[in-house]
Amino acid sequence: MRAALLVLLALGTTACRRAPPPANPSFDDALSYTFRSFNGEEVDLAFAMRQLEQQVYLSMDVTADRNQDRALTPSVLVEDDVFDIERPDRSLTDAIPVAVATVSAYEPFEHASIQMNEDQTPVEPYSPNYYVRTFLLGGDCFDSQTCPRMETHNDLIKDNLLMTVPYWFYKDFRWVDLNLPDPEDVPEGEEAVNDGEPRWGIIARSWTTDTFTGESENAYIHQSFTVEVWIPRDGNGFVRDGTEQNADGGEWTADSTGGGTLRTLALWSETEFDGLNVSDEVVAGTTRKGIDDNYNAQEDFLIETFGAR
Figure (cartoon, rainbow, N blue to C red):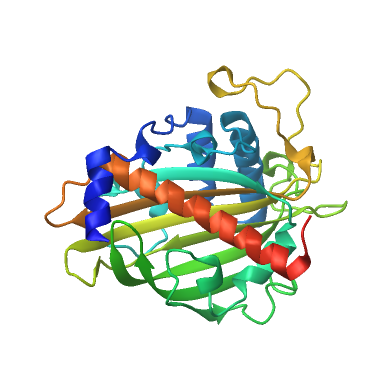
């Protein structure tokens, strides 16, 4: 692995030659709002996820083949975003941000079935030998939607080109009815109610509480946070009417009418490598590829489970 890494660094990393563009302020606002709203009222979280859905479609070509064309560099997290999380005492500005989107042929409830497996190695290419999920809450009811929330503890060995690190993190999940009204339309003191059909999406948020040291004691994961959404492409979300403008003059046309699920994962992670001059661009490129490889592994798992679509 070390020899391969040195070759990679010498070549400048093909996957990292063009870093994803910085996210525009509207995307950043929607992403951070979604992250910090995770434990809030469902009506607020639904609004945040709808804003993020629109910004993903406008900011990235979610159907592109190359992950570089489906990726952005978000802003760093700030203290207000992580106010309800136990985390390492480290500067948030040192956590490198990466966001990658894609589309799946499968519905959110089918993706939920993946999350119920204690052994996550089949869908985690960079933890092929050990990834055990323990259910702290909702492990017997989340996939059937008889409970709205699931909380998990995840113990794994991360093994990629840059590191082999045993570590663990918390990851929580929520079902969210995206057809709830806008918060401003709910009279003060009343509960938000959707009088029509629900539009179910899923959100997950993960975080570490400690620093973890690699097996060779030369790599460290100091802090890590993710937010991940699964939003149905059922035609009831963001739909283009010809007046929209994509970021940077992009000509892509995807919206919520495509069928299946829109997936987006943003990760902020601080890592350190003793004795190696590993640039932030290489770390971000490795992370971006890892996210996309996970997407592909999960899609393959769903093909085996539900059949090809």
